[in-house]
Image 1 (cartoon, rainbow, N blue to C red):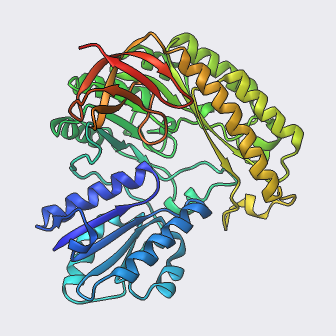
Image 2: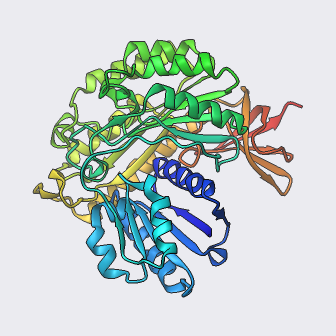
Image 3: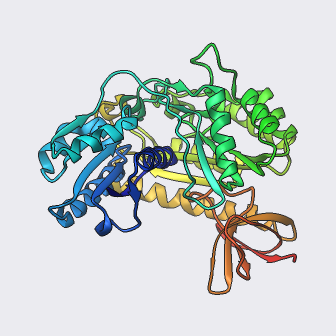
Length: 435
């Protein structure tokens, strides 16, 4: 069969889609670029927050409306895992559903569809999985490598534990094998991801911690150019991790530390650590260990009960810590989470106004941080080229969430080009190739 996969949501979904594609390829099926060319349509969904569900439903409606009689439609991932009944009731065009805890069964689902079965349900509500499948990267010179799935945290606003279950860390030999395979496929940058990468190995007795994993990858996959870490819980970033990052040449001096807020009382209501002194000390220690480090964070505005004073404290934290990159989100009440039951909801118009104020402040900070890069020479990993320019990223930029570096001239995707930074904008940099 010819199949087409559409992936919505986070990088963890990207990895699952790539692995599903490889499993299907191993059984003789062919990946095609356009949905109308496919016998089999697979939508790998996101249901993390309301906006993500809305995007997912819109895409599902479009696929269902355009589906040909000869085509089969599979809905995979977070949406059927959390809202199976809704998918089945609203979309009779769906032939099969498969959840986040059972996607390796994709080949069994397809075999059943080939026998003309419909209404196939591969959604498991209990347990969790750790799967490792050889795959080809779909992002040029960059690939995500998922080192754990699920989450043991109890953040009041987050539905991930309800969708994914408890954390399961991938055995180190699985991770190393995947890293080897990706580099053999031409990958230059590997990005380690999990719901919380800093708790890697905590759930297993046969696996070390994140610093140990970094050293193992560095030693056993020396051909790899960049190793990047996303999603580090602030209170779990240890001195050992900082010093390991500073020591290993392959590890990008970049860390994503989602704080979610800056006021201790809001953090308590979020069921997160209220230790802001510890956060200030952490950021200072990271910058001392790696003076050139780029730091990213995310914040939620409009959390239930958030007062103007609490919001102003958040803005002051943003000024003080001056993160290079920040994502701002308006609070979304998620069914089944403790936060959805909290009183004192912040009005939508107030949330929108606070969102704009936070974004404007971060733009000022980002410009200042980017201007510090002007005059530096940096290796740029090329993500694409056309019309006489190339688009790439320095070690300071994670794909799809941070800014870009624009270069004159067209260079091959996946190549590194040394460039001098000559101009800074709110999010992006402009460089001149030094070749």
